[in-house]
Length: 428
Image 1 (tube, rainbow, N blue to C red):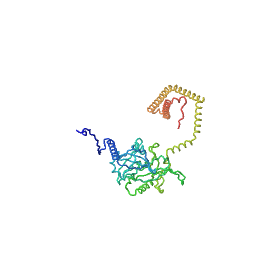
Image 2 (cartoon, rainbow, N blue to C red; image 1 turned 180 degrees about the vertical axis):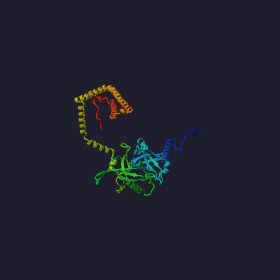
Image 3 (cartoon, rainbow, N blue to C red; image 1 turned 30 degrees about the vertical axis):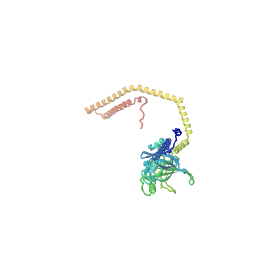
Image 4 (cartoon, helix red, strand yellow; image 1 turned 60 degrees about the vertical axis):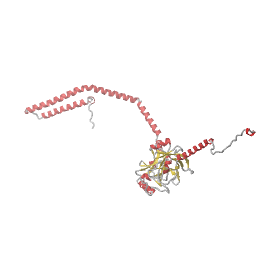
């Protein structure tokens, strides 16, 4: 055995590169996969994003307000912001994938509960929960941008509106955009705009109100020349006394609104033109004066009354009544009258017991006179030789005396006081 065989062998390490990066990379790879899956799921669940423009937000909140279609929640408002020109509000809606096929130019969006009213109980929910956006599918080409409405549109109106101007007097500033326009209790449109201007030509303030009427509410949907048909109809109704006026429903505490009403005896008028929307004549100021203005008129009339003079006269009259009531002469007169009445009452009571026997005796005398007259007639009838020329007249006087005695007895029985003060004269 050689020395070379006795030497120990050295261990040599050999490294080899593997395609697997190692278990340490499993955690970040799994995290990245989860993030990617969540992103894909979020994109898939968010659906399509559309923008809807409104005149005002009316309480819309991003991430809170719902989007409804046929009463079913199909999305939410993701964000609400002002447009670049600041003229309106843009609401971004995140809708479910199931409704993507309904996003077409004929689809309409409007606010539900934007203007709560006591006359519409369904709108009162917006006071607590805020407004909702309602989506109604329609035909047309696909789109992702829409113009929303502040109020529900008329069925079949397809967003068609015809605007008119009304020059009203009263608390026009209390009218909100979207306030209803009513005709015979039916909602036929809404308030689109209000303004306050100074008319230099008339040297007076002007408060024009722009209203948007919906032809479908009048049964004119789908007709050619919608504006011309509306103008012709309104011109005919105005000739019959149709006027616009400012009202509140309920009175005093309710929402201000515009009413189109027929006023008897209204002066002749027609649909006016001023280079823009046609003008619907308003009712006279006396018919649309607000309750506050009427209260001011009543207060001015009350202030014109001579209240101080009336109060002075009332105090003077009260003092005279008090002096008369406390006068010694009045008290003495009342006592004297009481004593006189007491004496009369006592006298009547004293005479009354004596009247009854007197009346009985008078009736007895009358009966005896009748009997004497009857006996005399029988005697004369039995012996004609006893007849005397004066006897018939005597018998007649005897019968008259009996009747007079009975009349006297009846009168004393009804009026015993005649024995004291005599018989009064008959009043004619």
